[in-house]
Image (cartoon, rainbow, N blue to C red; front, side, top):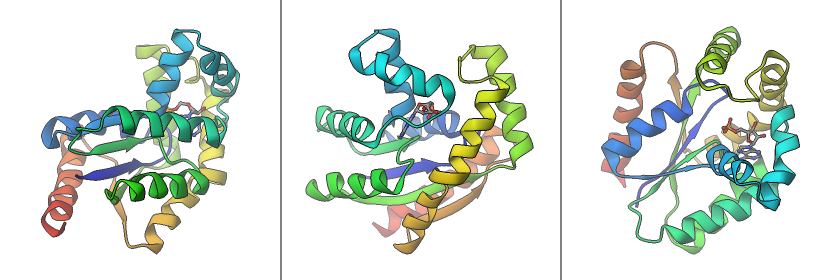
Length: 193
Ligand code: AMP
């Protein structure tokens, strides 16, 4: 199995690149943001609980997202591997993911971190607001999401760096250029695993 974390601030292009990665490498896309949006759309108890936090740009509690990820991994037992998108966002989530995958003997091979400067993130997210109409893509919430990323989530990169699994990628340029950088890392990781 090949398990990859795609990491970066909101607007870095994680979702866009995930779609290209799953097509080329036949992986299962696990986006906690997508799962939460589906729960909200279906008005499940979890969705109702998460809605308020998501619309403010705050993180949903660790135990909720960790439970969701565990269920998704279990329900995709035949998968050739996962691309984790938007998870982990805290050190606790990163540790839980290592535990869950450790129990299944399929560790994270690499974390690919997309680097994009802040003004470009804001410009991209405002553009996405026009195209997709996501409720958390307005300027106040965008600024809060970037703040939460800087204050809480960015430390997750250090967690993977400590175990030699962190790979930094320039997240600017065309979608194809960025994908070229990502796929050369994945090819390298596959060869050495
Ligand atoms: P995303 O689509 O990944 O940008 O996620 C949208 C929102 O869902 C985030 O701003 C958080 O409110 C929530 N969310 C998604 N993934 C996580 C996570 N791993 N931990 C906590 N909250 C999350």
